[in-house]
Length: 134
Length: 199
Image: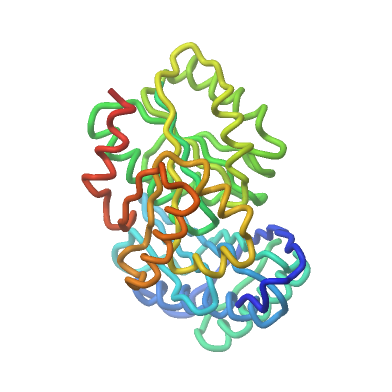
């Protein structure tokens, strides 16, 4: 959320991470979609709460076997994440997710900290284990 | 070769629009290439579009406008030689100022360039916020457009759409404006604007 129109010029410091998500139990694409949407919305909210900032785009992509994919993104703390997928049946037990975090006003260090915070919440809620490579 | 530049802020729907436009172009028998510039160390958009079976060339790392203008020109030249596309969709980073991107596209003197079209995508859900905080970037995006697409019509309120239409009209009254949802397919009115440039 924008604090005021007189904010000093905000810098964009792109942050990219690769997440390895190990699913504790078998999940359908729909279940994973809800988890992913919740995670991105949480991250966007944390970014908004971290200081003067504007979410540009927080986007994620998991490429799955046989041409399948899950693509998701969020563009603001008060807007729902959008998830698009081409998935049939249950997902593999391990997902590799590429995440690009493009938020004006927050440095990479802060974004990495916020990411880890969002991931902790995700792990606590969803029977998942996640490792991060930045 | 027909060049279509698709600009718009981060998350406004450029990749979705480019993908859908490319798919329709291919269905109509065109050879379609997409040049995408994504800020960040690892591209997501190009991977996604390749997963859809589209031909994608990527420019990574910086903005086309700032550091990669030369790379864009080189890529266009290589495309003409190696791929001979009828339609090239250029999707710069949403953080790029269209003025500088346009400069790279308009000064390209390829032997087969027949037309250039500049499409600007606007996100009505965030228009007020972005106009308040990133005014120069949004204004430049609107100014340097032949066709303005107010996207996400399925999600935005009437008030948000009307505000966006008003702002766009004030800044660039000459541009044609279309309201649609790129993820739900391309409106016939949109395609009719793009088709003339394809002859």
